[in-house]
Image (spheres, rainbow, N blue to C red):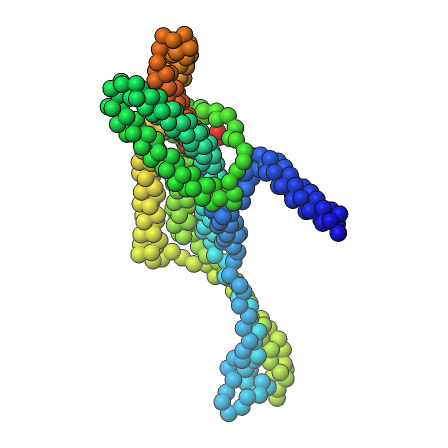
Length: 409
C-alpha cells in the first residue's frame, strides 16, 4: 500500500514540475516583438482601423447613383367608363426614371471619405507607436522598481550593521547618541521609499496587463534615438492636422462641383386597346433632364464660401499645431539629452564611490579606519546606484516618447 502511495506522490510531483517547466518556457519564448504584435491588435487600434474601413465603404457609396423609379399607371381614364377602347388618349402606362447627380460632386464627396479613411489609418499607426512607448516605459519602470527595491533592502541591512556597531561604541564609552537619531531618520526615509515602490509596482503591473494582457518577463530592446531633421511634417500630430486641410479641400471641391448640372432620363411606354373608332396601338415617350443652377446665389455660392472658410480654419489650426509640436519635440529632446548627461555624471560618481568603498575597506582591514566609514561608503554607493537607475529609466521613457511622435522611426 505504501508503495502505491509513493508512486502517486511521485507522479503528482512530476506532473506539477512538468507544468511549471512548460509555463516558464512559454513565458520565456514570448519576445518583445510578440508584445508589439499584440499592441497592433489592441482595442484602441482595431477600433480606429474599423472606423477607417467604414469610411472606405462610404467612399465607394458616394460614387453610386440613386435607385431608378418604376411607375405603373393609367392616363386620361373617364369616370363613367374605365375601358381603354373608347377614347383615344386613354391608355395604360409603364414608366422608368433615373436621376444622375453630378459626377464631379460625387467624386469630391467620395474622395473626402477616402481622405478621412487615410487619416484614420495614420492615427492607428500613431496609436501603435504611442502604445509601444507606454509598453517600453512600463517595462523599464518595473525593472527600475525591482532594482531600487534590492538597493534599499541592502541599505537597510547596512543600517542594521551600523546601528549594531554604534551600540558597541556606546557600550565602550563613546558619545554617539546624535548618530543614532540620524540613522533613524535615514532608515525611515528608505522604508518609506520601499513602501512607495510597492504601490508603484502594482500600478505598473496593472498598466502592463491593460496593454498586453500580462506582465512581460522580457527585457526591452536597446533604445535608439530617432533622428529628427526639424521637419515638423515628420511629426504624427502635425501630419494628422495637415490631413484635415486635404479633407476640407474636398468640401471645397464638392461645393464647387455643386454648380455643375445634374442629369436625368425617363421613358414611358403606353398601351391602348382596340376600339370602335381606333385601332389599338402602343407608343412611348423619352425625355432627358438637366438642372440649371438658377438659384446658386442663395445656395451654391454660400456653401462654397462656407467650405473655403472651413479650409482656412483647418490651415490656421495646422499652423498652430506645427508651432506647438515643434516646441514640444524640442523640449522632449532637451530633457532626454539632460537625462543622458545625468547618467554619464552618475556613472562617473558611481566609479568614484566604488573606489572610496574599496579604500575604506582596505583601511578598515589594516586597522586605520572604523567600520562606520565602510558602512557609510556602501550606503552612499547604493544611493548613487539608485539615482543612476532613476535617470536611466527617465532617459528610456523620454527616448521612447520622443521616438513615438516621429514618423518613420
